[in-house]
Length: 301
Image (cartoon, rainbow, N blue to C red; front, top):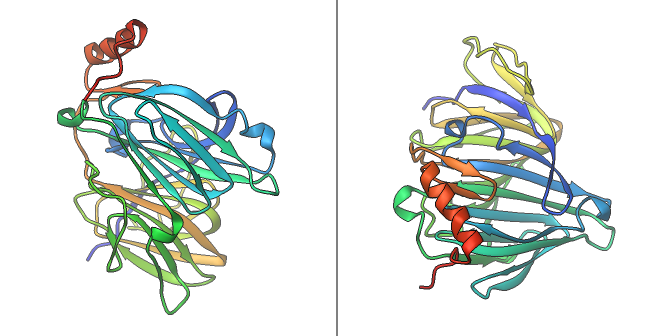
């Protein structure tokens, strides 16, 4: 078994999306091949409703899958194929946009005004770009949770992990998506398919991710400098990009650490991306936006 070296640690950047939602974007600024098949990861959280209440009114998607995971508050969903629902603390919404869908996501805080959730975009391969749209809504009680003897807790949203299988299925990228908490001072090692790209996103506490001692690439703008020693430190709103290997090892600091660990099989296909639509060529992208203008974007099945 080999530990995955840490390639980079980046800080999520302030971004405004939808009708004025203030959030932090962890994935979506750099080279999409680094996180292939994942394109974007947004962290939307605030105790102030003015930061999120305007939400994400009706907008189109094509060529991707969107995954929304709520930790506090709720998100109301509606779409052009007739799905309606509300996901709240611990719930997941997994939407395959495929050939085209128009939807809205409207967040609402809990009784204290708190809202916290994540949205991840997974790319679709060329062969499935124009597949029929699909919607999966998973309640918190249906997401397997495993608690180890030392207090480490893992929720498995998608993929197989620690002997359990997540409830979301039929996803093109064959991803693993888990929510991990490691208690104060504990060191844990987690297995990852060596063929997959992988990253972690810390959203509570802090800790150190072990990596090889070889010097790391020189950081660019918005990338934290990390030491070339045996551990890379990461805290709240840190994205950790891993190199190849089949294990990730983390050492929790005094307050413990909680993070998303996400991996998937890279598509290794060209990406033509503008706003909510992701295709393989500029011609396909232009066609999608032309169809939006002409009213032929949504395909009957």
